[in-house]
Amino acid sequence: MAPQRRLSTPTSDSPAVQPLLRVRDLSVSYGGHQVVDRVSFDLPRGHSLALIGESGSGKSTIARSVLRLLPAGVGRATGTVELQGQDVLALPERHFRPLRGRTIGFVPQDPSSSLNPVRTIGSQAREASALLRDEAGHELDGAAQRQAVVDVLARVGLDDPERVLASYPHQLSGGMLQRVLIGLAVLPQPALIVADEPTSALDVTIQKRILDLLSELRDSLDISMLLITHDLAIAAERADSVVVLKGGTVQESGPTSQVSTAPTSAYAQRLHDDVPALNPDRYADLRAVGEARRADPASAPKIEVRGVTKRFSVHGQELTAVDDLSFAVPAGTTHAIVGESGSGKTTTIRLLLGLETPDSGEIVVAGERVDGRSHAELRSVRRHLQFVYQNPFTSLDPTWKVERLVREPLDRFRVGDKAGRREAVREALDAVGLDHALLARRPDALSGGQRQRVAIARALVLRPDVIVLDEPTSALDVSVQADIVQVLLRLQAELGLTYVFVSHDLALVRQLAHTVSVVRRGRVVEDGTVERIFDAPREDYTRTLLASIPDAGAARRPALAEQAS
Image (tube, rainbow, N blue to C red; front, side):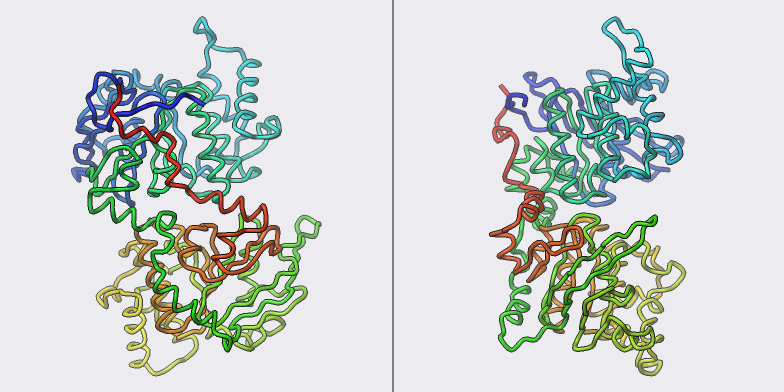
């Protein structure tokens, strides 16, 4: 690992620190609408700087400006962006093009959409390897280029580089694809890597591995990193300095040790308060209501899953998705199911909802069997068992207005008359904190947080006993996520709702849940109260999951607050 360094504040003009990247008064507009306003920061060689903020804060637009990837004819950037002392905004495209890849690399957000699905990894890797040169500046021959790609794929932790090169993107996992993109980005050993939310689409354990990999490559290759993220906890753990953005303007900037522990601006303080990893006990008072219900000796389980097994046939082979799984949820509490992708979480909730039939075992909700019943028989159960999907941008019919979206369950179950349904819809909106003026809007006229509140109102309108929530905040900014979590806990405290909460975000689980089942390959490897699982995990797999929670206190360079000397 590179020796510890000291770094001035991001906008310092200290001659002791010669920034690799120097941004001054950067403003960006799209079609005359300004989205970034006079942003300035410095990034020295070998250091990392995080741009953080909510969606629409301008952080990705700044990254595109640095990369010269603003939409042609639409995006316009002014100010200066100096890379190694050269203003890239002033360069003609033909002069900037050679810098892409060789001097500045890019790791995009979604690996699944960043590679051509009809070309092998090897054919796409040739574009990056063509940038390589020998000591005399000559292009490497084909064999040397291929070997360089094999070496870098091995370096980023891919066990069989030759198989990876022969594979198409759909044949690799998301974590493997992200490692491929990182390997190709660092292959020419650029001076700067721009990483735009590089782990948001990945499981938390894979997220940690990818962030560890980026940190290791940064140190060993002396590469600077511009990290784009909405998560202050990740920024605090991984970046040397932070620029906090809102509405395209800088709200606060400085060393991570300062901004993450003692933010001075109101907006940065709000971001700090909204990050689950930084505030595990934020909703302790609301959560305590459910905890009292759980501890009540007279409390009976609202949900019981007993020895459930589900197998599928895949390409002629039998796959066990859920294996002898059991758990119970006391009424009025939240039970979390956590685990990596492929652990059986989704199959479990499909079984609970009656969308799949178990091969063996029993599922009981509010005293009624779910398994082994016909669609007509399940109708009465489903009225009291509702579901909130993961993505509010795809779970609502875009052609319907909010009033119809929320009212539809009442229509299907023929609950009440027309006036009664209208009143029930308004009561559901009140419960989730939405204004009645939104009833006439369609989903595309709502924010992500408003859409998810509509989805929750839709689940509430039948006044169910149980709500199953499948990663209900994973597509939302942390500040919007915090609002949704508060709504869920308030409704649980007031109405006695029982939740089954599926998530890979253990920091969020600690804030929200009372009990938890840790699932791996379809089996429960550990379960118990949240306090016991988080404070005294018994299984190595659980400890691995817990270790993936960003540790904002583990600043890589604690001396960053001092002036460079």
